[in-house]
Length: 289
Length: 281
Image 1 (cartoon, chains in turn brown, cyan):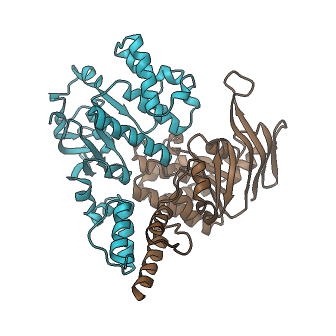
Image 2 (cartoon, one colour; image 1 turned 90 degrees about the vertical axis):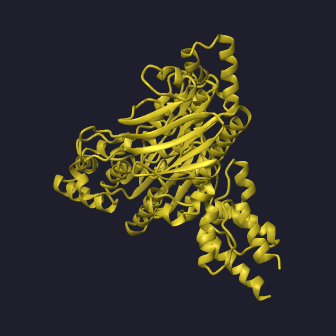
Image 3 (spheres, chains in turn yellow, green; image 1 turned 45 degrees about the horizontal axis):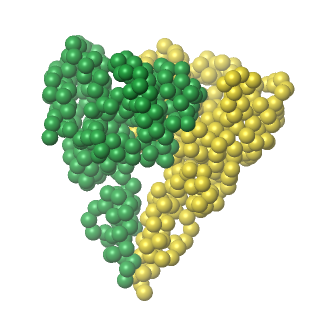
């Protein structure tokens, strides 16, 4: 499902003394099946933007097109439920939304709300408990007796359970330990490929954006100011820094090395593995001379 | 060096009497001195946050003593001790009370009876330290996550605490915001002798500490300087932690057949070694 935002603007508290502009003239196109990372410093409008992706916020100006559905300023929108069925959002700290008596029931809530049978919902819940690396016996436990990391996984399972075709992730690994972070990011990547999802990741981590995304959108002061492949976006250090964003660590290290040896290494090291390979290769060339 | 905080064989269990439940904190002892920056690291569920709650008297130990400023923390002296400690939690939404940013920062000062003129000065000063001076009259709830956290940190700094405890306080900030906050804290430590405890997953942040305490299953697994701790490499990985970037890249470079002398904690050290031993020929 293609998603596009055309000249979207949004004002919080419109026509009140607290009116505050959060988005201005945002143009973003997200192709079906792509993995898009939305980056920008805090307050740049990333989270406001993502709430437009399933009609939680309605644009004050412009048009949001989600598949065939159109949400535009000043008109009444129909079919929001259908949109929300296709677009699953994992919010920041999604564990705050847990509420049911048992983990199983919590995961089943979403699909049953969208009309999936109880039996099928339960089957999905148990499948997801395994997929997310939770012990099988958590199904009948209260989600509130679990550790923070486990609660996060249950909450994510609750979104995956209604099988959205677009998965929107807002800082899904904030507060997790490094291993938990890696496991969850790898899982999303695996689902992206296996289930042919359209994935949208809102993140502060330039490293995650560089490693997983094929499309990067930069937000700054409520506007979309840059977009392209990770190579295009992270290859432009000067422009990025004007938006108060840094380079992924591996790219920064590549630049430091290049400065030291006085020549460029081929390509852009988007991951630590690519970085190490490029350095090792350059070193053998020096050795051969 | 004066002692600021010590834990003496402290244990705590959330469910007393339940044989099956593990102790969240199990026989932990360490001492923290004036002007030190100590990082407590460990995976989710390793007991770090429980430890923080014990330090500030939100919980009291089942066994052992928590001593703050060389005195045992009790329900009687709790408020006096807390007035000298600043605490910043992971999610700032849970700790806002004021309707504007400046009111929020002033809240704890009012509670502690700071005179009005002094209060104004401290509010402006602490907001300036976290680069939030332009937001005095904003509503805290309308700020972005990172801005909120900077306000929460300003609220803690305004108390002029002797001890600042940060429980995953930078985990929600963007990289620039994180660097800013860490610089502010490091600066306060150097200039005003502030003692800092940061509970963190961010190993680059832990690198800045004087000492690191590694928690695992409620117990202290290791204590040492960052270098001592990170040289234990594989062991850290098996308990769900990672290594700092420079060490991870060093490991990969070796895997691709490059020889490196020594271990490097920072990118700068690694770049220098690569230059001298591989590229300067």
